[in-house]
Length: 147
Image (tube, rainbow, N blue to C red):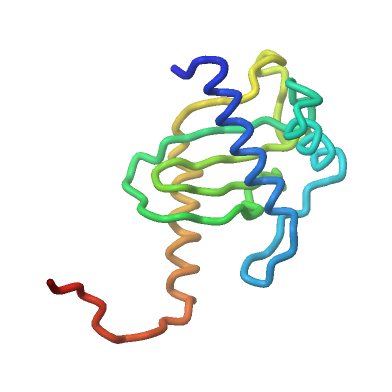
């Protein structure tokens, strides 16, 4: 279990990644959060607030090895539920807006929800494999290092 200060640092890191995903970059599609979420992200990053009202963060350990990074993207879900996800190594980070989450399920002071979600993980693997299959392969030269 993380200490309170460590969890605050982790949450700061996660929110900063999601906030950066709102900027336009020609390599990836930016995330289009509503203005209320963006303003709350900014306020949190400037340490003006400590309790999130407009979204929750999930941190999930992936059960299968995943050696890669997936930039933040809007993850399509059933029932039009809005979620945004990014992956670093074996950890999946998901932002769920308030309107897509039953907030009464968790106390208001819980900022980060930890767990394992095989359904989300499976969807990430499928998306990654599809993106990889569609990507342009470059090079073709031998890059083995010999001493």
